[in-house]
Image (tube, rainbow, N blue to C red; front, side):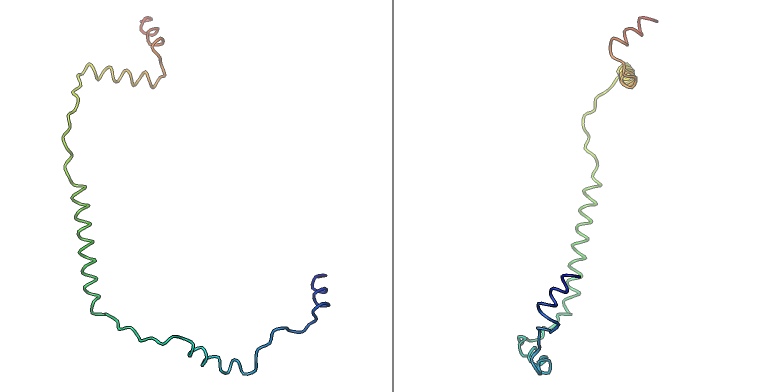
Length: 113
């Protein structure tokens, strides 16, 4: 509040901004005269169907490419043949990992039986 009083004492209540007389009477004409003159563009409405057809063909080609890329049969790679004995070892290793048993614990458990 003190700042407002200080400013009012220094400047007063007068408005320092003034508009010249008749400025807004001539403003629209001056503005229109200052704009660059240009010719209206001819709309190429007859080209729209061609653009739509080109966009449709591009979309169809992309979809076809994606379809064929994803529908390829997987390549046959050599697979390891596992024996039933190997499967038992694998299951035992998974169980040991799950129970957090190390080799010492496994030997202790096997020696008890």
